[in-house]
Amino acid sequence: MRDVLDQSDLENKAHRLVEAAKRAGADRADAVAIRGVSLSVGVRLGEVEDSERSEGDDFGLRVFVGRRFATVSANTLADADEIARRAVAMARVAPEDPWADLIEPERLAATFADLDLLDPSAPTAAELTARALACEDAARAVAGVTNSGGAHASWSLGGMVLATSHGFSGAWLRSGHSLSVTAVAGEGTSMQRDWEASSKIHAADLDTPDLIGRRAGERAVRRLNPRKVATVTAPVIWEPRAATGLVGHLLGAINGAAIARRTSFLKDRLGTAVFSPGITIVDDPYRRRGLASRPFDGEGVAGPVLNLVENGVLNHWLLDGATGRELGMASNGRASRGTGSPAPGSTNVTLLGGKVGRDDMLKSVTSGLYVTDMIGSGVNGITGDYSRGASGFWIENGEIGEAVSEITVAGNLADMFARLVAADDLEYRFAIAAPSLMIEGLTIAGR
Image (cartoon, rainbow, N blue to C red; front, side, top):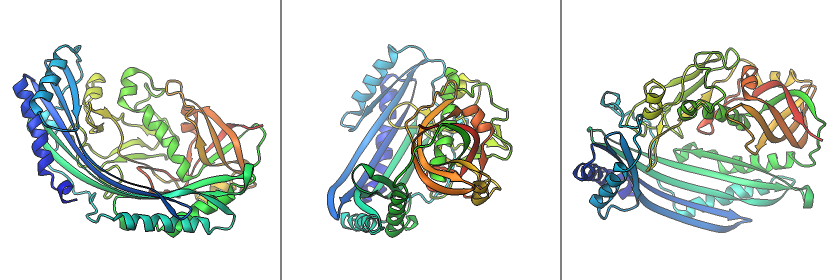
């Protein structure tokens, strides 16, 4: 672990790549060096099924020759000069790109926020095994649970360095702890399964194994004996865990790459009311201990906290340098980066809770669907047409009733967003966070 925590080796290697690119004839260059260590244990029915540890380095070099560029990746720096020569040779025969370039120097981060992204403790395989076993035991102890899909506990530690030919040098480290379990209820063709999980930067913030296991078991048992419903138009409520998918569809639609290609149903909606009044969606790269927090993006920009949507109005695209230039705008620090070229992406995204209580939201529904799981990816990003499989529970007279399955929820995202209502039960469990969400008048296709 000490080798991973010491960033000097990664920094030296990233700078070596940039200097090698200059010697090879690159006009401009940047390099990333990524180091990761992970340990995971999987158990099933009280026995260890797998245990895996990985450790490795990855390097990426991006070089520019005039308006042409190329990227090369490697997992060793035995010969930085050879990697740089290969990258420059590729760039010289690549087509010109008027938008790709290093980020403007004045946009580079000068200071780095302390986001508390590093838990210095590293669990042993035995400790992870104990967590997973305790989690599975709690799930199997729930009345009605008949089998287990297994439990997994993992730990990871990763570091990234970015160095550029115009003088930027930055690094960050992030740890990760996760625990998950899948419970199976019922017998034969009537079996149902469900899962529960917790992922945090610091182990101390994880939900307890008992809580995770019990929730998974209870969710699986509640899904037993589902019925089909007749096709109907009715309100749909997504529980917080399932509601994050709706936010994810928005993020895809406002990604700068989709806007530049004109392949988003929201391509002409910047500055207009896309959601109902009162809906605010925030992208915050600086949330302390946030799962997607970072002090700077993949190009070295410390982008601001963005109200992507404020009181229903769409305010921002997700932009890196290239998509910003293509759209005549500036990067807002949303460049994601591996060893290849940067691409726009989000960080910690939250759809803020509304003023409606979750119970009051349920009481407002005479007959409708309460969604706990979505299936498939039937969304057309160009038109916004939405058709996804779902399962959950039927709402009758404001109460959650029988389990239902084999249902398709259909609509158009533009119309759905405009009618969306948020409850006050916001949950911060994933990089995307949302409360319960309700949309009236959707097509629910059943039998």
